[in-house]
Length: 265
Figure (tube, rainbow, N blue to C red):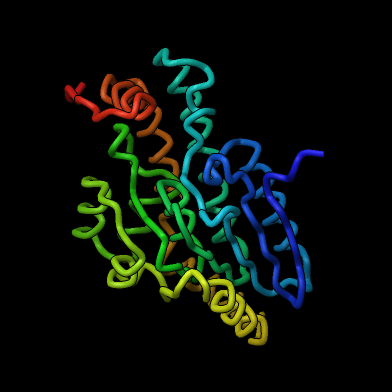
């Protein structure tokens, strides 16, 4: 029997949702996305669950979008554009779901935290990172804009100057870099990661859940009101950029493991 792409466990009022596709570093395929949505809905509707932990199998959180699925219809412009339109819309649904659930959600971050994986972590309420975690807004490296709310979320959290630097340059960041930017709540050793995440989840599970739900609703109202519009804009921009020569060059270079040569077209 094939292993589930998303595993779900609930114990002591804490639901743990594990993305389980380690061979792709837990990349967001359509199948994984659908399984994640089902698991998040299950945790949301379970009255015994007060806190949700989101994590990845194989000592990686997520490498972001599933390049293999993106290219499965070929490199022709219209086919690529249509596929990207669909995939970006799919990951946007997860971003909205993470905010719509009025229970605290903790992202347990280790290894690869890249692209859409990084942005979905930013959508969560708490982020605990292992000191081995590596973060990157990788989209510019293949000629795209961030999805899963990336620019909007970063701008809300760290302001326009650092957001511009992060998304336009696409530099890799260590967990300590993220801590200096206040993008993670804590950085711990890989040995202490499980214990630290569970301690936070347990603490949250013992607090008044109705009050926490009201707080998240108010935070959504004050800090995330523009998320829907930002996600729609991402779909439009990604669909347009998927037809560019620079995107094709970026993807081809990525697959051929070489440095891309962009023409600005």
